[in-house]
Image 1: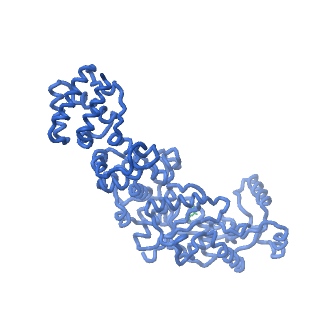
Image 2: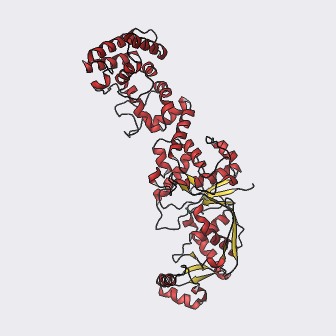
Image 3: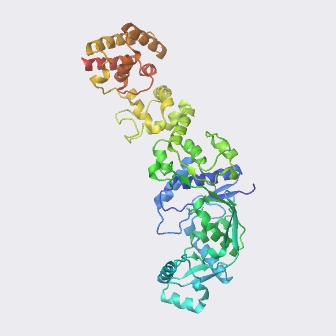
Amino acid sequence: MKNVRVRFAPSPTGIPHIGNIRTALFAWILAKKHNGKFILRIEDTDQNRYDPQSELAIIESMNWLGLAWDEGPEIGGNYGPYRQSERKNIYIDIAEKLIESGKAYYDDTTPEQLESLRKHQKEQKLPPRYDGRGRKRTEEQIKKSREKGVPITVRLKVPDFGKISFIDKVRGKIEIDAKEIDDFVILKSDNMPTYHLAHVVDDHLMKISHVIRAEEWISSTPRHILIHQALNYSLPEYVHVPLILGSDKSKLSKRHGSTSVLEYKKQGFINDALFNFLSLLGWSPGDDRELLSKEEIISEFELNKINSSSAIFDLNKLEWMNGVYIRGYSNKELIEKIKPILESENESIGLPKSIKRPLDESYLIKIIPLIKERIKTLNEISELIDFFYDNNIKNTVENIIIKKLDSSETIRILNKSINILNDIKSFKSELLESSFRNLVEIEKIKPGQLFTSLRFALSGKKIAPPLFETMEVLGRAKCIKRVSNAIMLVK
Ligand code: GLU
């Protein structure tokens, strides 16, 4: 494919939905695959709904996933400006040209008149549609209405007969009767273009080769074809990507998990894992592989492997995938990702404030292998490892008492445990394990009985990283201190 130019054209009117970003991701992948250009265009013609926070969230989501654009607002490019509100005059000029060539016309039908038309059609059980009355208005009449302050729009003159057809790369040929479409507005009374006009003009002027967008736009595409024809523009390729549904097959909403990319970032998901996961929402490499690097996705990506059926968002799969990505990192790489989280002042994800920052990396690198296998998100880590840093271990007597034994027996065996910790020559997990297993045998108790008590003594937790590796990392002095504290508690 030559000269691939694709765009992501969000309307910044709310928190970007994960589906929008998935669409951006497909466009980005196609551009990368064909050494093409990926363009960001901000579609902000609806100034009442424009939300600067939304635009920031779109940009942050794209940056986090690595969807860098080659042309766009701020960075510019040869086909700018890339913000539709800055292109207003282009659309007005084009609407005027369409009027001059007889392909569009000014309409002074008032909103009240349109409303009564709709009401009448409803009563007659007819589909609601504009009846083309503006076609008959003279220049003089429009001028008068304008002077009176009647809102004037521009409508496209849609042929009353014939078929409109286009090829969608995902769904094949789509065809409808022209008479199903009424003369629709292309320039609103505030001189702002409608989406239909603006994006067709921009896609043409920006030399967009593929319009990759959500399936919901299919039904409007015949209108877009008409605008192309009226302007003698050649058509781009159309690629309408499928909807994303929740696990119960209803429209993806908050009930199914977060619908915002940045929320996943906040929850400790890895950007590359989310990239991989999103790439499979509506596309597959043609077999059942699910773990693919960015490079593999780019090289395998084909438009004809995009599904026409809806994609299902499976949060469990994302969590699993995230765990796999975490395990795929070297300890050093993982430290780079988690250090800012552990050091965060946000208590729900960071280590307790009492722990000194910056964290000592040489200590952290010993802890990481102990938890790497068992986490799904980065945010789980601090809760799992805080006891390595915090000597203030909270326990109850019940935690420490060895199951099925009483307190004096517990104290006796924990004292023997201290002896092991004291006497052992090399403080290594294998040796620690065999020594403690030996003790268990001598005492004729089950390993779990002693190990649970020791685990609580060292970590204050029922579920913690492997016991003997934990001992090794904590070191002799801390282990002895903590087991002694546990004994004191039981006494
Ligand atoms: N501004 C439209 C949207 O956000 C763009 C649709 C398109 O890509 O053409 O849905």
